[in-house]
Amino acid sequence: MSHNIKSEPILLVGAGPMAIEYARILKDADVNYTVVGRGLNSANKFEKELGKTVVQGGIELYLQDQNEIPKIAIVALQVNQLAAITQLLLFHGVKKVLVEKPAGITKKEIEQLVHKEKFFQSKIFVAYNRRFLSSVQKAKELIVEDGGILSFNFEFTEWSHVIAPLSKPEGVKETWFYSNTTHVVDLAFFLGGAIKEMKSFVSRGLKWHPKGSVFSGAGITNNGALFSYHANWESAGRWGLELSTGKRKIILTPLEKVQIQNLGSIQVHEMEIDDTWDRKYKPGLYLQVYHFIMNDDCTDLLRIGSQLENFETIFEKILNDQ
Image (cartoon, rainbow, N blue to C red; front, side, top):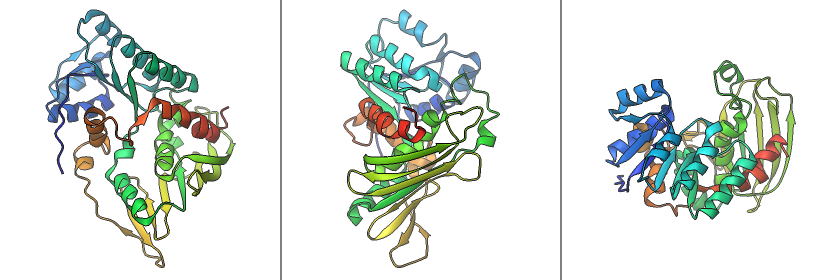
């Protein structure tokens, strides 16, 4: 399996760990890109790992000083900066943006991005790279092969004991469900189908995430599949997804692996998949970048308008945040 990425110049906004992951792909694909960062430490680390000079001073200063700005951008910043910087890029003429999930940490921010996308006649895609995991792509194939999903369940437990001591900008941990947990929630409904009806329950809460720490719910999708979910951020657990067809259960726990339990059997076995790109780069990232640049009509890419629907029909309901 091979892909050649041919692209006009790309603006990479951010020089932190996620930007480094994107840059590895752009460098190996010989894509002409400019990286703009703010902090000295992150810039030094980026330059050391990639051998690429970082334009320092922040994206605001860069946009003011440049006469020619690339029409394509990837935004890999802290979640509390994503929406504002994406809007700024559109104002300065960028026409296609891949912005790290969740693109905004409130529905209002997402609504503003939907409006700006239309106003500036641009395209905004939200980077949920786990949609492009080799395991997920294989699961999609199996679901089609089996005639669709009958039911599914998923877990999105976060490890509070790991997250609580982390040093993050104000608002990041408080919106952790949006900024991180939606990775697996998005994935569940990406594979399972759009929600028709859902009932959600939330209890307790944490000092750093007061909106809840124990979650449960169930519902039905537009294609008739029943689903349920559970998460307890104060107990043991992990991310996971199980999808049941008329022929087998497809288990994505961990998400990067495909395990199968066939109808009439209690045995679970791991399926071999071609995960070449997931082993070479951050899992799911290569195919995401490839389609963003080469095939932005790919239905696996999430448009900002669909993210707004996710906020309204899924995310806010799971949190009872309405």
